[in-house]
Amino acid sequence: MKSGLLAAVAVGGLLLAAPASAQGVKIGILNDQSGVYADYGGKWSFEAAKMAVEDFGGEVLGHKIEVISADHQNKPDLAVAIARRWYDVENVDMITELTTSSVALAIHELSRDKKKIDIVVGAATSRLTGDACQPYGFHWAYDTHALAVGTGGALVESGGDTWFFLTVDYAFGYALEKDTSDFVKQKGGKVLGSVRTPLNASDFSSFLLQAQSSKAKIIGLANAGLDTNNSIKQAAEFGIVRGGQKLAALLMTLADVHGLGLDAAQGLVLTEGYYWDRDPRSRNLGERFFKRTGRMPNMIQAGTYSATLQYLKAVKAAGTKDTEAVARKLKELPVDDDFAQGGKVLENGRMVHDLYLFEVKKPADSKKPWDYYKQLAVVPGDKAFPAAKDSGCPLVK
Image (cartoon, rainbow, N blue to C red; front, side):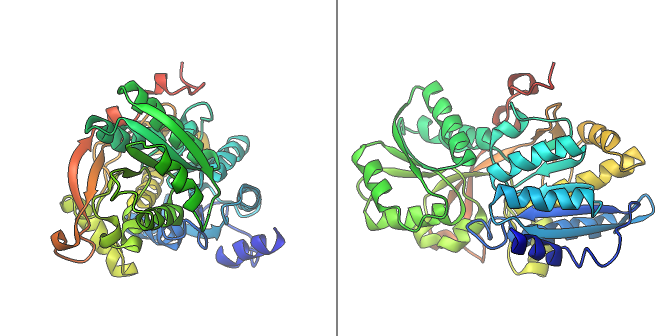
């Protein structure tokens, strides 16, 4: 714990060297920068946030905007310790990205108690705007409900009506399995079983053999990052797809496809809230991001750009960085940027926007670097996310 906090302070830019200004706006990027989700968000989300600040002009209400960053190592207790220090000592006004659902839920609770804004981008659980919603908490980019509607719905409708889940053993996995199972059953499908897998597992063989023996048409991978990549690679070794079963990567992003390569990832169906080569605005964001990082952003990194930019727009519109006033503006202002157009924030803090169902291209169909996706369908925002009144959020009357 002590070494983690010292690292966080160092990454934050010698935060102890001088008292932080209470006048400027300070934004914290808190995520996994060294573990299983390091490519999924990581230092690239930090770059996306800095890019948003630069695009905004570097100042708001006449004061400088600062972005700091720390690695929570996927440990909720470490994340809370860092966030508490940021809020109490370093005058951080808003924390965003927040990869890992257990971390996001813990920071959501802390932010409520401290009356500070958090905008979750990297974590998936739909509980954040459901039973765990709070007045100053927001959720961007995607959630487990949207993934279930997109990927789960598409596969059931195409005949994949029996499922078995490999579920990572923490809040994100449980939520993704539950939301997808509910949607599969609503569509007339059946869930034949599931197995819990450790986070950052190296060997999935016993879990894959259980899935294979279930004879389910679809093996749902309710995991993410390197866990998903390793599941797919080891499934190939067992000949699971050759044997007639399909893998459903329920949370997979462009970064994961890039890490796997098209040979291994081809044919996978997945849902993302952003793809760099989808239209002129997404290309504008993607190509500018590529120039500074050497890679294209996924929906987490592009979503962090959007969340940061929207927060700054809300501060400007409110004329103050007061939490209550900014939270109100976040729920009033439309979201229109290179990540999402026509977006809106509901009373429970959920940002609603369209998502997209993609199929990973075959190597022969990829014509240029990072040309990985073929779009199959648009998942309209009002279908991807439940109405606030149906979310289970106690704030919604």
